[in-house]
Length: 94
Image (cartoon, rainbow, N blue to C red; front, side, top):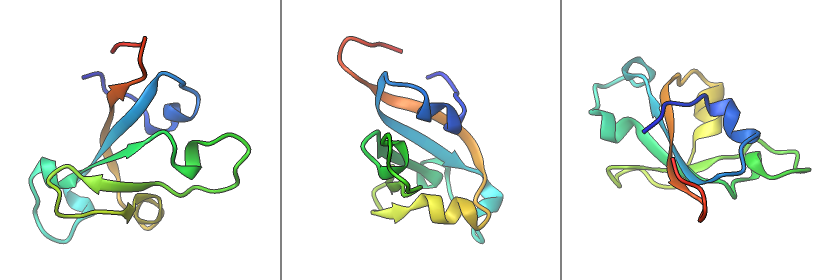
């Protein structure tokens, strides 16, 4: 799994799903990495061309936190520890 920059996802066309892992200090309680990891797809409004929106709705990998507007939390201080592509489009491979 290659660590990439979150903002680079806007220029890439080879991915279907990606994961961001937020830093431990983004939360008031201590959570394991799987709980701080959120997966989203390339069809989120933030990644669509000619759409004026930063909305990214994601689900935590542990399944306990669903339909989270992670863009809102990033604006309020959540920091990305790492980002990676979890599923590539057919014909691409990571």
